[in-house]
Image (tube, rainbow, N blue to C red; front, side, top):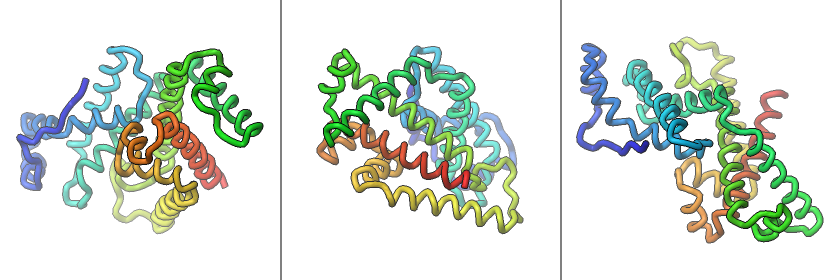
Length: 257
């Protein structure tokens, strides 16, 4: 179920003012329709494990419900763009829903783990990463199957990383009722966390940093990143997975220590 950006209705400050004063349901629905594309964008961005139409409908409904909640909670006076505000919350609600539903099947976890172990062992022995053809031979499958496992690996890693960020990001954008008189210690912790995240990204290898930047900040797809970097999509997937693994380890150590 794909939603596309609606350019027929512009949601500006006057619209938010009107909705704040009237709480008109028809106006709210028009606002929601204008931003439905954010739901589709976040579902595609996280590459979640959707196996059938029912899964897609369930997770889409979850995103739309959160979008409606965002319209009701949004405070246009704070100067935060609605796109940013709602995207963060929608992504968080989808991740939470996936976690509760357990949509990362055990067999997929096992296949991703096996692929990683074989790849690591090959790297240790040969001093380079194996090709998909070599991996396929080691696992007794064809190269197309390696591509599928890579796709699952990407989804698994993205969800795990996003879950970590959502759980520990204490930005006021995430608060139910933002308190302008928040304690200085809380604001300091928030700033430190974000600074540490930026530092962790900067410490990645150049190609890893480029992939993370293009994927999360420029929101390019893996095929588009592959074209930009003149690499195969499979190689980009490998770099992405390795970079997320490093970031997760670094941030986990920061949080726990």
